[in-house]
Length: 84
Length: 375
Image 1 (cartoon, rainbow over the protein chains, first blue to last red):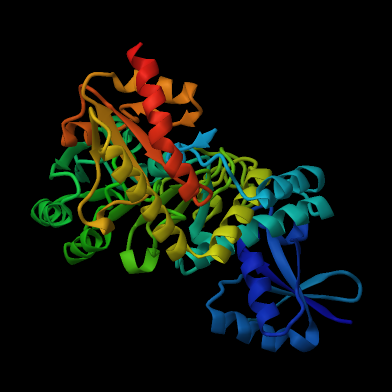
Image 2 (image 1 turned 60 degrees about the horizontal axis):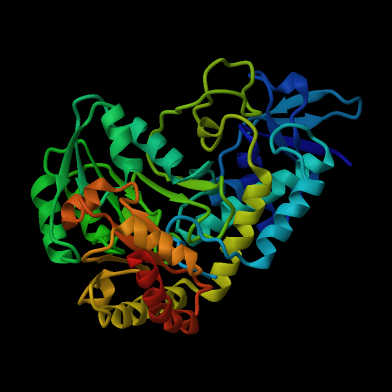
């Protein structure tokens, strides 16, 4: 199953994002961001399934939850940035 | 033993507080550090507590709830964020050293509104006259010495009219009176976790609605390549490892309070204090500081004796099993305002766990203490 990462600037923001997505009925797991995606060192992200991606972004916007860049996890493990 | 020193620290806590702390110590690591299960459990607990506190105090977002060591820590952050040397800062005449000492350290010009004890209208008018042109206003919600409830919503409104940042010291009101961050429009609200919120010592909360200046720097588990503190809350103000067992205990205390209802606790504590005051007033030699208007006093009562020193009476009460605090209570401003700076007072303060039966026993125990102190 294809997954996307929504970058968050801190743990608390990732938790807020996860909570907003949960309220919208979207399962999202919080994890530490992959090393290569944390330009400033140590970040957090929430991971959502591809089929929920658009709804997830809408839910975050509706709830006023800030988020950062979006990445698609390719089958070979690479992260590809996608437009918001 | 009858514990009447909850204005210092509430000693009786819901059982869940110590149970949650023990669970945290046994199962949780640190939030924002590792990605493993013990770290995740800690992260979930800390976030739950932020969300619960944000809901309780009507804070828009959980990241605006910052964990501190105590109210003093929070007040130091708030004042360092808002006050520069030479600024005129208006405070009430009932402030604790947790407000006035940081202001002195920051080089502020303290402008104290000295008004009569329990005179709410005079306090409001005093602030109205002094707020224009001030750089900041700091006010305690409830005097830690006399239980005087300051008209903080009115004071905050005047601050809004003049665009002066308002800082509330909710040390004696959080968990006992309604504290609404958005209704106040406050820049900061500081409170301890270990008093009315029924959490353990070493916990405190700062509600933030202003730009902030960290007073300590260090690791936050975020933006680690940068050598500056992150610009976003709560990380900006939470350097170092969190007190996870403390926060877990605090969450249990807050949930207990919300289940029981703040309005009910407020009414109960007021009732206990008034019953206590009425019975002590009948005792010769005791001066009892009771507000005529019930709404002007929360669950704190001060007394003094015409002949026996406050420290001596406090010690004698301790010897007969009544835990109180005597002296100046780290609040010389309050004692100067009330005219008790040379004698101090004996303070009796209640929590949701005190009972009418305990209050009914105090006169007899007070008689024994007075006899002991006179001997």
